[in-house]
Length: 82
Image (cartoon, rainbow, N blue to C red; front, side, top):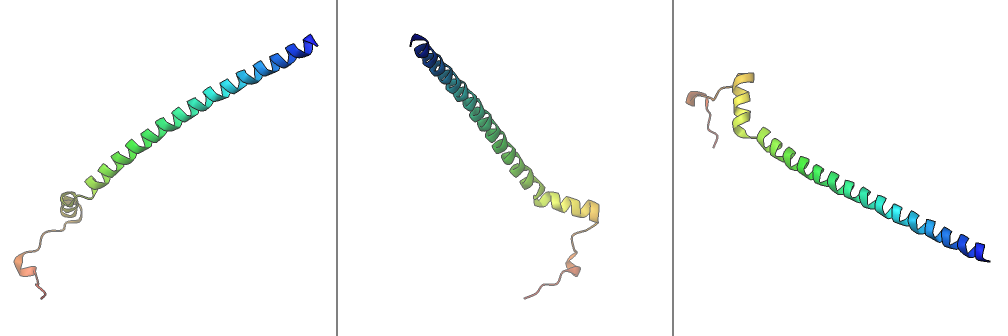
């Protein structure tokens, strides 16, 4: 009887220890997911800023003039439509 009682106690102790280890592991996984989420939010903010920089009219005008050779039309070339 004494041996059976000790076996049950040891099994309960192992089960409790296993639950605690799983709890700690899940805590680490949650922290890693939170860290990754913060990294992704920072990356998204950086990409939004980069997109706005790339869409700026000054940059587009500079590229049009230097790479494509576009120039602003002279007043004689303009046609006003009413």
